[in-house]
Length: 62
Ligand SMILES: [Zn+2]
Image (cartoon, rainbow, N blue to C red):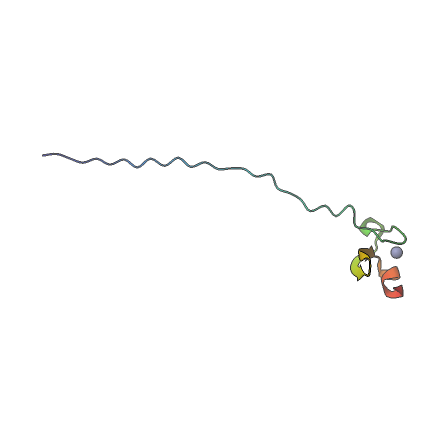
């Protein structure tokens, strides 16, 4: 009588990937330079020469 013994060995490798945090420190108004840290609401707006960020004050003026 022959017993068959199968052993399944699984080596699991966990690859840790460094979490990339989205940088929001560069978010500031294109005109006055105010940012979220100043209490301004920054909104991106597409212009003819590209995209720029404006605060809630200058966004309505554009
Ligand atoms: Zn502004």
